[in-house]
Image (cartoon, rainbow, N blue to C red; front, side, top):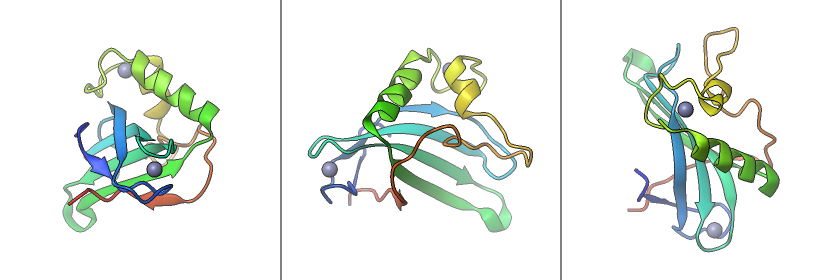
Length: 128
Ligand SMILES: [Zn+2]
Ligand SMILES: [Zn+2]
């Protein structure tokens, strides 16, 4: 997953990479969920990504989307993800896992709820 390249919303190049990700585990809507730090090798775009996969009936499918972050917010996100020692384990109880994996009253996780975002969300499209 980390070697994949996505289309960058900044420069439209296929140069956007996931540089870090935390596996957050299932919630009421999804069987798998990750928060990701995104960076473009070409134009310097930075953002957060959310990968959600559901294998249940009508809601089945993959949603992978991102949103631009102000640089200072991105640095905080990347540092938080890098500080986790078990990024692939939803059972990890570190500060980043607790923060980004927190559930709302409806039982759904809101990985980006606490981040200051900068612009509309965009779909992450894999390079063909
Ligand atoms: Zn770019
Ligand atoms: Zn952790």
